[in-house]
Every structure is written in C-alpha cells, then in structure tokens.
Image (cartoon, rainbow, N blue to C red; front, side, top):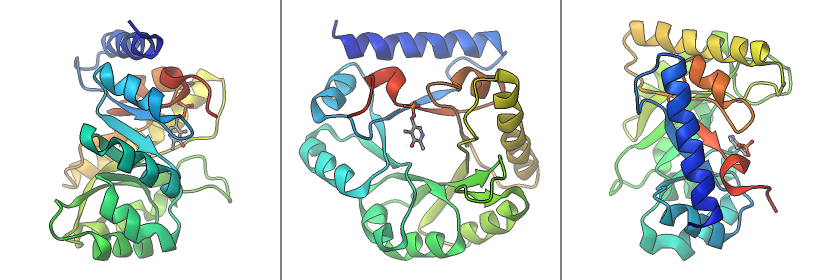
Length: 227
Ligand SMILES: *Cc1c(COP(=O)(O)O)cnc(C)c1O
C-alpha cells in the first residue's frame, strides 16, 4: 500500500475510534482532504485510496489542479479566504465554499453560480475566538447572515465553520468548538436545517469530534508537510 493510502486509512481509523469514544454515530464525521500546497501526484495517490472530497485555499492553484484532475470527478471545496474579485471563479468551479463571512460575498457567489449547476453548498465562517483581525463573522451576526443566505436561490446553507485560535490545550480547543456546536444546535432548533459542522484540523480533530463536528478538514495529517 502507498504511504499516503496508509495515512488516509489510519486517519479514518482514528475518526472511527473517536466517534465511538465520544458517543457519536458511526460514520457521522466526514473527512475533507485539505490539499493546498500539495502536489498533484499526492492528490492522485490519496484519491486512489478512496478519497473524493478535497479542499483548496488558493484559487489559481486550485484551478490548475482541477483542470489536471478533471477526469477523476473529485468534489472540490473552497476553504480559503474569499477575495471579492475571486467570487466568480469560485462559484463556477467549486461544489462547496466553507468561508462565507459577509452578505456581499454571499450575494456575489449566488449571482455568479452558473444555472446549469446545482446550488453552491456553503458554510458560514464564525469567529469563535473573537480576535479583532480574524476571519469569520461574530457570533452575534451569524443568524442574520444565515437568514440572508437562505433568500439566495443559488446557495444552499449547509452549516457553520470555524478555525479557532490554535492551541495545544485540549480544554481550550473544546471550548471554542463547543461554542460553534451550540450555535449550530440553537439555529437548527430555530429551523435552519443545517447538516454540516465544519470544524477540526490535524492538530485538534479529536476535540472537534468530541464537540460534534461532522466534517474534519485534514491536511498534513494525510499528506504530510506542505510545499
Ligand atoms: C490548511 C487548512 C486546513 C488543514 O490544516 P492541517 O493542519 O494541515 O490539517 C484546514 N482548514 C483550513 C481552512 C485550512 O486552511
């Protein structure tokens, strides 16, 4: 078996183990392979081991990979910071966008989504760590943005996403994830019908699963170090 296939299988085993450990339903935590700054041959290798969903952060890099790998029919997720002038290409080429953080970006993605494609799946990025200069909308503004997104026919609001401040302290990791998870539950009780809680990376996935993540975005834990 290839080395990366081994990493992928190992990661999936860890996910199953954590699902069981934290009383999560088996198979309830999905895996997105974060392939930014990873070469094509590695993406192919991970795909060969069964992975279909890949996350990219940089539009130009992603477009090159998509063109090269088009026959594989991978599912591409945009997980990077969204610049306004990139929304057209993002809406045309991706199946999912995880970092929607303003009405302006949402509207542009909606308006640029080609009508031949199904609605673009989106997650709203929430700033759970509350730093002044960090991406994501403040918790207090999430519901208003979510309501707005639901009025846009070419978008499908699937859930919430966060990248909390990095810390090795598991308790702090869980506190941030719990905040997002509670917001997610509260909003679903209000009828938002979201199914995706996009949280957890290589260094904090266990805490994320413990707090209810349904989608981990794992890069180095599968591919090794980035270029
Ligand atoms: C790079 C990246 C990841 C993956 O990070 P790793 O620590 O390599 O697992 C996940 N989410 C986002 C938004 C990223 O930019």
